[in-house]
Length: 331
Image 1 (cartoon, rainbow, N blue to C red):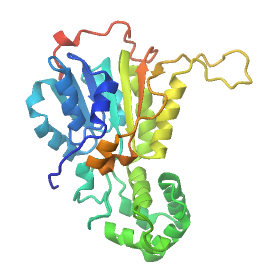
Image 2: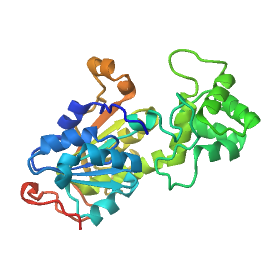
Image 3: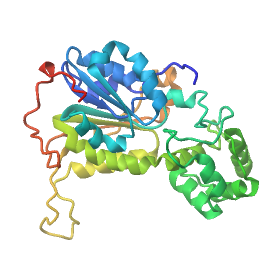
């Protein structure tokens, strides 16, 4: 993989949103190139600790180098954030002051990656974050029925021309590379219109399906509440409406005491709010950042703060440990 300049999105806003403090303990669930992790470690020094997680082994290798001066303060784990609770319990890394999820693709994955995340260059249709995953994008493209392909592209790509694209894919297969697929999609929709390539939504849909991104996001969000200390912050950056909708609904639901339908006069669910919304309106990149990093244009950030926890971890949210005097345990 080629080395590319990594520009973390909404960097200043993330540090503010997490309320990073010296000696704090933080989790970066989507390590990527390590840009956000580096800033968190710098602002939490002295005594700060960071657990970095990424399903992509290449991201772990890259971040290990970029974060080398913080070796004694970091723990980097090659795993999917859907396993967040297991990872934290394994390394006794909870409760924490903040959890960050920066969803979507990293610059490393978009730039000359041989796994076919981008249609800007020729590559195999793989799209797996972790090479140990079983299903690839080529498997989906070449084996799914026309109806199943159309439904997938429409559901995960929000593509209005999904049935036309699916029909063209089925008539053309086998399709093995990114440029082949991009050309098929472009032919199906009648060429390029505007600045967004017509294959963008189809590629998004395939990547989401291959990596089960939406299902993993929903499950991971539920686990964050159990791991945050009282007053700890949850910060999520999403890049399309499907992700943002899941995050928005989760934070709103967890900020309410009762989830019963309005027709029920007395609460029967017993649900108690575990989060407080910090920003009611979504946070987006500034004009200055958009000029410096056009890839940030679709970023949307939401913030919530932990106010209670009745999860299975059973730790007391009112008694956050003094992380300034507690070393990073790797046992």
